[in-house]
Structure formats: structure tokens, C-alpha cells
Image (cartoon, rainbow, N blue to C red; front, side):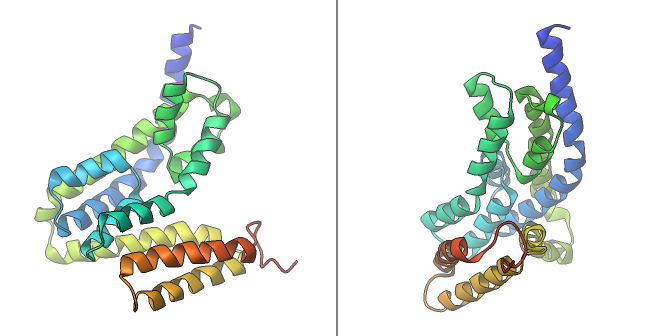
Length: 236
């Protein structure tokens, strides 16, 4: 078997592994796009943001902050903090890959999401190649762009009540991110509640965008000493 054939087989295997993600990415992409349209983004801006950022939770948060009148610095800082986990995930993905050209590995790292990270790091050792991961993110990236495009182009055709109801998509996404980590970890759950309360209190004395950033940083720093990341209450 030639090297080219082997690489194409790995790419095809990655494409196949990414297919189930379409069912999640397209609907959330549509929800994001409708939120962006309601916030005043153009069709091009809505789709371009998905192409350049490729991070659903961050894009939704940025759109929400924009609606609240947040400045560019606050939005960039908030999304940077939210996406810090990607630095760790990208490092884990690249370290698990069989060595390849650095530019290609960096391109693959751009496509790291929670879903692609989970599929790749729990997969078979034989699939730990750049081509497999590129196939995987081809599907995830394309489905996210497709969902954003569908939402941006069809938002004006949807009934107002349906468009308005999609405003809860931001909260639903953050709940979906939080719940798996909260299971069996009481202290982490308490930290989340404390963070929400601190954010609520700070929003009374400063702009809500900066209240979000400050409460996240302060409570995350406190969580280093408070939360047991191995699970449980930490009292064992």
C-alpha cells in the first residue's frame, strides 16, 4: 500500500468519524446565526465569524455581549478566557499525533473543538494521524459553516416567535458544557453558583461585560484551591 493511499484512507476514516457531529453542529450553527442576525450582523459578517473563529460558545457569548454594548476589548478578552481550554486540548491532540509537517499539524490544531478532541483522544491508536484528524475537522468545520449560512439566510423566513425562542440557545449551550463536569463534583457545582452570584453583584457596579470577565477570573483563581478536579467533594 502506497503512502498516498494510506493517507487517503486515514482522511476518509476521519470523515466517517465526524458524521455524527453534524447533527449537533448544524442546529447550533443555525441558532448562533439567528442570534447574530437579530444583533444586527450582516449575512457576510455572520458567516465570516464562524469561518474565522469556529467556536460556538465563544461566538454566542460575543454576540450577546455586543447586544449589551460591550466594547471590542471586553469581547476579545472574554472569548479568550472561555477558549483557554483549547490551548490544552490542542497540545494533547498534537502530542498524540504521529509526527508530520509542522504547518499541517498547526492547521489541524485550528480545528480542535470539544467534539473533535473527544473523538480523537478516545479513538484507536492507529487513527492518531494528522490526516485522520483533518478528515474529522473537515466535517465539523463544514457543518458549522453550513449551519451558520442556513441560519443567516433563512432567519428572515422564520416566524418571529421561533426566532425569539432561539435566544435561549446561548444558555442551553453553556448548560451543556457545564453539566458533564458537575456530575459527582459538589465543590465545582458550588463554585459555579458562587461565580454566578459574584457576576450578578459586580454587574450592579460595573458594565456587565467586565463583570463577567472579573467574576470568571477571580472565581477561577479561587477554584484552584477549592475544587477537586478528580471528582467528588474533595473531602475523602
